[in-house]
Length: 317
Image (cartoon, rainbow, N blue to C red; front, side):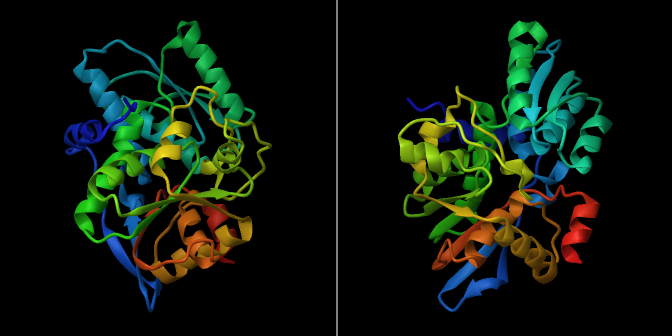
């Protein structure tokens, strides 16, 4: 039996209904063409300004329902998951330790600190994940992976439920891929509710562990480079459950480069009047760069808006 089912996603939707928004699916005239209607799923308007709040609230609410009042949570994060889990943990009065990549955007780090979580900076995301898991295993608390956790995946999958209801004739959905939790959840939901919808993932050249692992037929370690899409970079946890899920529910994965990302991010700000971060630019980048040919009704997930002001200003200049 798969680690996450459509029933788990429906349960997550009920659990987080009062805590998150049903986000808009907005037509983009800029990205649409003569034979395509491209819609933007605006996860940027969620509390904490990213989709990550869905999985964080689902995990924390479920722990609270099970009576975990005195539990300390532990996680690793490139920023958005840490911010979302800190927000949820603070609401439920649970202590949290976040092992975070030292190079994470200041906007994300400061937001985590404001929620009262303990921050432990690490050299990069891979180090953060290793140290967080070791700390939790040594009795430091319960580790909640930003992507390889059934409740986190089910929470992300609630986006798929909304897409199926908002656009009943959806030909494809384009989803950024970091650790694979977002596309796993959306893929499970859509394969159950809208099996004709193609699920297309987007990785960045600087970090494409799914592309390389699926080609090799096994999980492989990659050399991770810097990227505007900092939230999508890093190796996969050797114990991840997302590789097998992605293999089952994702139809295609494409790779975009940094020029694609910069052009897409500035284009979204200019044409759509929306602030997004680098990871959220992956879907528009795939369309603008011709990696994905949009035909029919296509949804693109704008996953988050947590970008440092200086970075955004530099791009817009």
